[in-house]
Length: 179
Image (cartoon, rainbow, N blue to C red):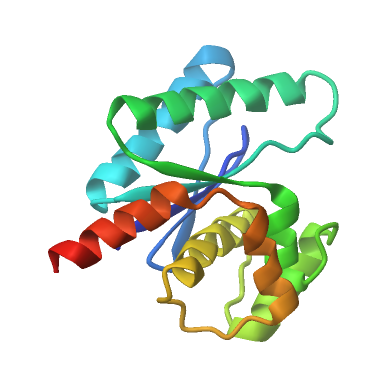
């Protein structure tokens, strides 16, 4: 199953497909930035024959107008996916952090260190934390459908319990029934 993990950001959106990560960046502002990022995500969906997208949910700790701007980006991306019948799963940031570290309030550096220690994958450069988060979102989906190559602790797996996996599970079961 082709899964796209997305860590939405106005400055460096992290993406992960088949464990390969990257970022989407632009110097544009306002509606132009929203359009550029969302269209780049659609390009990734089409280019990689993506069947489902895992999107990091909204952070309610965002400050000032950034919360509105990231909300706008999330809305535009979700709408573009919905318009093309691409299912998506929203994964809260606390669940992503708990899956990576066993603690829902872990800092980004702690998340990256934990994933690197477990997998040997080193995320570096501009947007490294965004790429790592996108990779984790993809990995969470792989774990739910039983195709992860990694072993996760019971505490880490408990992070999966608070997520509505229906879009992923339905898609996976339909594929299994056709096979």
